[in-house]
Every structure is written in structure tokens, then in C-alpha cells.
Length: 402
Image (cartoon, rainbow, N blue to C red; front, side, top):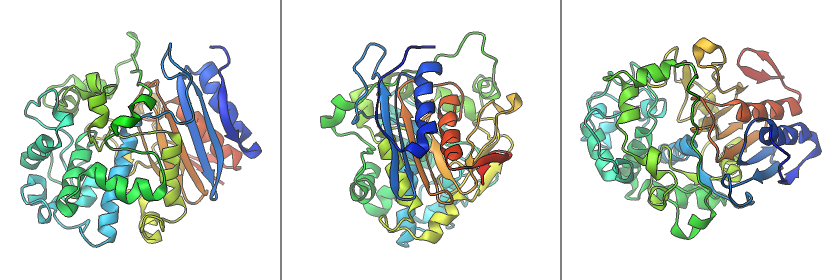
């Protein structure tokens, strides 16, 4: 347990329970620096930040930015949803109609399969150079030629890093713009949010470095770690053949400038909540239909053992859905929110989601990563407190409901 930390911002009285849990993350759960933002029924009700940008660093500021890892996948997916809405790509047509060289598309792979991680391209087999994540042209070329790990649509395996390069390749072929440029023009700027896929150099001084999680030596070996040690598995290829960005680039200027559409987005809790608020309110500010957004909480792919994560997982149209993996045999953690909710977790514990049924838009982001593959106790405690503040109960396994 640590001493009290300075927390600033605002918290509506009806969400005092949530503010208390945010503080408890610092005093009891090892938080270093973090921010939390919540919208409810069109009103920003929580906007808090606190802690430090580094163990011996400066205080976390209102405008501090940092990596949100896989929460970036939502930003990339929404770019493609805009193009679907405009009739520029059919989500159920083979991707080869847009990207002729893409082997997965030639075999019938579709955009819907990319969205829900059933396309079959979770990793690359041939060795990649250390700077691979900084070279979208290289990644697109390799992914186009890659033979899928399974027939597209017949399996599920989390496309942890490849998702963004596939999305970027499609956006570029459809619009002539890079993924980061398109996202900034069509989504971030109209919404007035700070969320970048490729950070401008002028903003670099505001970025807090990420502190990687170090597992205890006596920590039990998970199914994911066992698979990562198994050459020939998709998990092994993802972990050991993704260049050195995760090890060396996450806190570098070069890494921040790169357009890594699956994991390299830089934002904060306010940016995440603002992005999801545009969906909670119906999507009109982005030009998305209510019917399209209503489908975001529908699982189109779910399995008992994701071929990369090696635990049960559920995905929809570019979003993670509720996953109750709290039993030790299922990994020990999950993502537990409302039945109508959809969102995404970032490596180490960041989270953004929309729950239109509850009128909620949620953003939580931090710089000290936690353990596990999904939401660790810091983030889940905040989600739980948000629903409890609205009178919800966790009476159905894995979901909050009234």
C-alpha cells in the first residue's frame, strides 16, 4: 500500500464511488499515473487524473498523453466502418476486390472476418526485421503474400499487430490516404478529441512513458505463455516475430511517429471516452447510422480457445465484447460490462467502451502496465463502480444489468 496521491479534476456526486475506486487504484493497487473519463447520457460526469508520469517523474497533467495500445484497433475499425457506410467497401465481399494481391482475400476472406479476428492472419511466419512495425509498406507486402493460418472464417485468433496494417492497407487503397491521416481528418478532428495514429513531433513532450509489467518469477504459467514457447504456433510467431517495437520502440520518438494501427495510438482517457461518446450518442457526428452502431455489440466470432490468446474470447465488428474469464482455468481476468456494451482493452489495462443501453461512454488509461491478457483489477474495479453508481447488478454471469 502506498501513501495518498494527488488527484485532480471533477467527479459528479452520483459517481463518488467511481472516484473513490480511482483513488484506491493508487493507494492499494500500484497505479503510477492514470486518467479516467466518463460520459453519462450526454454529460461528462467524471474527468480525473493523478499520479506521476514516471517513478521519479513529473506529476500527471490534465493534457498528458501516452500509448493506449490495442484501444487503437477501435480507431482503425471506425475508419473502415465509415467506408462501409459510404458504400466504398462491402463487408461481406472478398477483400481481393479491393486488395487483389491479398492471399487471404483470394481465399474468401472478408472485412467482417478482419473485424472479428477470423481472417487467419494473426502473425507472419517468415522472420521480420527489427523495424518491421515502423514500415507499413513492408508489413502490407508480407501480409498480402502470407498463407492464412486457417481457412478464412473457420477459426479465430487475435490479430494483435497485423490488424492495423491490414486496416491501413485497405484504407490506403480505398482513399489514397494513410490510416493515420484519414483517422485524423474524418474522426479525431470532427470530434475534437486528442487521439493520434502517428503522433506529431510537437506533441512529444506531453507523452508519458510506458512502464512495462514484469511478471513474478513464481507466477503460474498460463496457456498463453505455454503457447508462446511452442515454435510453429500462431502465438509463438506473434510474440517472437513482430520486430522490436514492443521491446524498444514504445517509448521512442520514432515509435510514437509510426502509424501502428493495431497498438500504436496515443491518446488519454478523455480521448478514449470522447471517441466512444460519439458512438453512444448515435454516430451522427461521424456519419454512422444507428443501425450500424446497434450491431457493434453483436458477437460475430466467439470461441473457447482463441488460437493466439489461448483463452475464451468474443469479438464483434472491430470491438471486444464481454468476456468472463475470471476462473483460474480461463486466465483469471476478463472484460465484464453491460450486455449492450462494446469496446477494447489495451495491453496492460487501458480501456474504452460504449454502452448505449446504459448511456455510458468510458475511458481509462494509465502508464504502468498490469498483468494478464485482458482487464486487470484496476480497470475492472472502475467499470464495476461505474455500473454500481447507476444501480446495476452483476446478476447475470459476466454482465452488469438492471
